[in-house]
Length: 335
Image 1 (cartoon, one colour):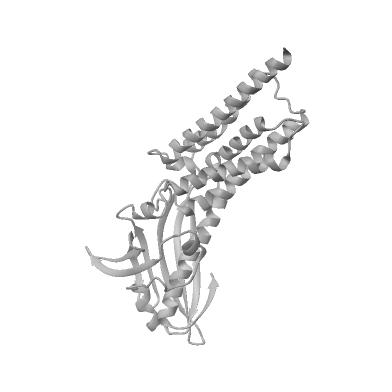
Image 2 (tube, rainbow, N blue to C red):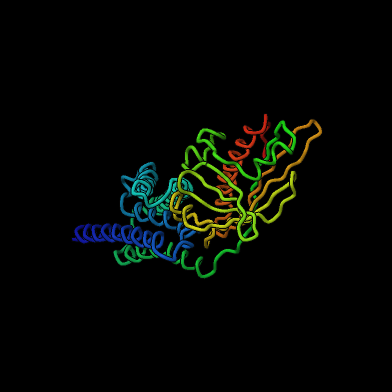
């Protein structure tokens, strides 16, 4: 009779854990794609605690003390999380760049949650205790990520300024390079260089930057690919030496054709401005520096900042390569 009651409790616990996983995924989807919750998806709760809880809930019920392979404990929850991201990407709900940013953290979180439960259950001989305690554990695991998300939304991380810069030495005087800093029309698809961001993550390549006069201002109107448009409102010009701008985004084309969660003037990220600087060299070449200033807030700023350095750096290196190819020969370097 005791074995029968234990078996019934185990079945109830299994269905409860599965129900918690389904409810967590549904609630997370509402937070990720519902209106007004963009900030909820950029912190510890969404990127680490959520996959940790999924991995832990799975591992709690899928293994017993007698048959508890560590490889399965780690691989299966991670595969589930990867499958979720693949469905989201294939369904067109997220861009590849966002999936690439989330995936490493979800793998670590999912494997970490499963491994933590593996250790606890292994040392306890596979027992979860009574069914009431098991139910409490399941509900608690499911609620933890959302409690963290709520805390992060109630007390958001402070904004932090970051600058990404790349430079290139071009075998030409500043006077020959300057026109391409002011505007670059009719950029062919094969101009520039191959980059991780453009060629693997699918971010559109620049097609043109044209200077126009509008209401007493100089505005560089930029177009990437067929559909992405934004503006660079010129704030400083020293002819032949430097040009600076602040970004303006008249529409949502960046989110619509890149990723809906990468808003360039949103609650997580703000692209502030940028500019070029020209430095003549003693050997007759010119060093061109392209910089981008942005602000970001997240409890995982160290991780998202690495992605900012990588993706914006790729974009800058591609633009500098286009300027190089239209001006002269080159030596690349980071600033």
